[in-house]
Amino acid sequence: MTDSAELLSLLVVVEFAVTAAIVALLVPLDAAIPFLPLAIVFLVALFLYRS
Image 1 (cartoon, rainbow, N blue to C red):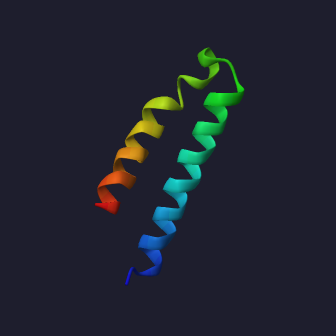
Image 2: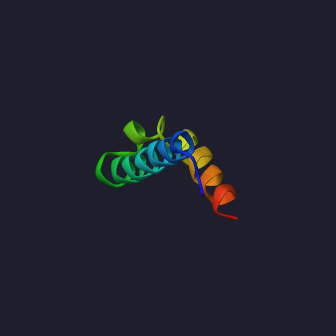
């Protein structure tokens, strides 16, 4: 079972990844570009955590 700090970190990563995906879909690409590298890093981290 995960401890509370790990669960909180996971929720923050999921929240940012979802927010970055919504921003990438709703705003022009020029404005969303700063979010994309960090979103990719967080998505890779989520993938590695799940595997």
